[in-house]
Image (cartoon, rainbow, N blue to C red; front, side, top):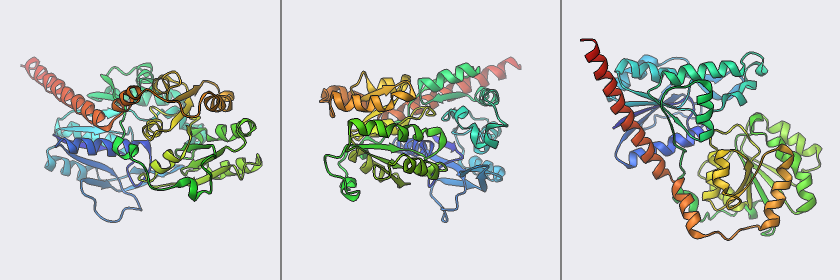
Length: 391
């Protein structure tokens, strides 16, 4: 099968969407299929890359580290025709998503879509949220998804949101998997030693884009209370983004300069070293449609404390792989409760194996491939019905 993936964001831009696409590409190719990624140009990419087509782009409004294509539609169509794609998979509702839809229409092939982002949490990026409203998000998402041959939702939370928007296209919940081989192996890099932390230092980790919608400020504000119960605790914040300066100032104003460490952006190949060094991965974000970092942490052997939703509840399994909180005021209490109960719960091996198997990249690839096959079959059937009804 020849698959064209259309996305506004891909490496070297670091995001959950880019990671999900890279994982899918690897798994589909491992099974003998051909994958071509159509994405935006990036100043950090100079030379030509195998299997990647980049369309001329500019930074996206105030979301400067993301880009939007401004030309190249007909070049992309020409390449897609030459490749004789079987299916198009869009991963954005914006420039490349619309390009993918147009090309699928021209080639008369199905176009499926993964709905990655809970956009209502990102409206502040455009004119401080004064122009676009949640009703606009609902309308655009509904229109885009209902013109797709099928939708992949990374979680039950995302599926419910789409149903709430009035999406009637077929929706299949397929969480992105992780490369277990990469996260399970012991990392030789000693992050604790690099940061001059002892083995007894209680190390909390935040790893994400450092932006308003990730609510990292709530975690920083919870640290003084955590320190009352765990005086040796340290918080390492890995990632970069527009909120970094503001968060550094917040940490300083709370007298936490020696407790909170801002590492900045690290290569995707290096994140595992940070997961394995940590005692607990903590996220106060509510903007995730799935939360790849949660399963990367668990695959690395590190439990999580995260906001309660259907997805995190499944992962924590009543305290087995961490704990959840419902209210902002419960962050410190939940972190302390986790360590009071037992720093490292001895888990039943079978329970861990079952969870890891369910979040493997192999299973993810197989499920997406099955979704493609079913969609192509349905598309061909609908075409036949349309031909017969016209005669």
